[in-house]
Length: 179
Image (tube, rainbow, N blue to C red; front, side, top):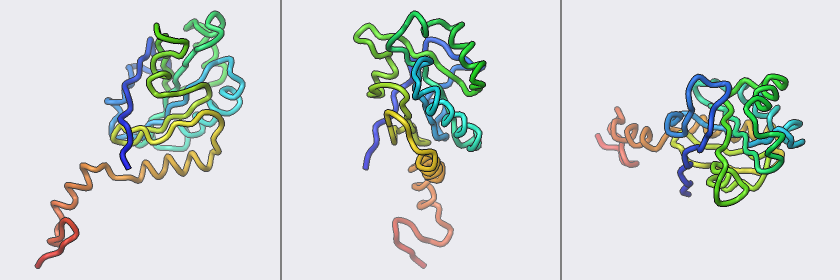
């Protein structure tokens, strides 16, 4: 099965981050993106708390958790950096949160549109090679999400599998062993 490469994020600015995380810069890690809006009840009650639990549960060397503030309604109430900073502070959200760039071609912000997301809360899982492995609108069971993340953490990149086969110390490669 082939999976699509994740497009780069279109972020106006980052909060809770010293730099600007990118999909390319996070290659080698599993990426969990939580797309949310401050005034979305499902985001506040389920999506963001789940992302915080994931950030606390997995080693940051293996899993990067990112928030994607994707405003497609109530722009006046949700659109300011100051409002988002206060929200992140009040809810104690410490993982990096990017403000999705608004689009000229529709109501969905750019990153949300490019990832094919239909609303919030939405989850995106990206594997270590930068491929989209899951998108889901709505609530996800913690155990299911944790198992999916752990499965991606446990996968070896295809480049590593190929080099392991070529450099096998027992004389085996491509499924054939020779003396």
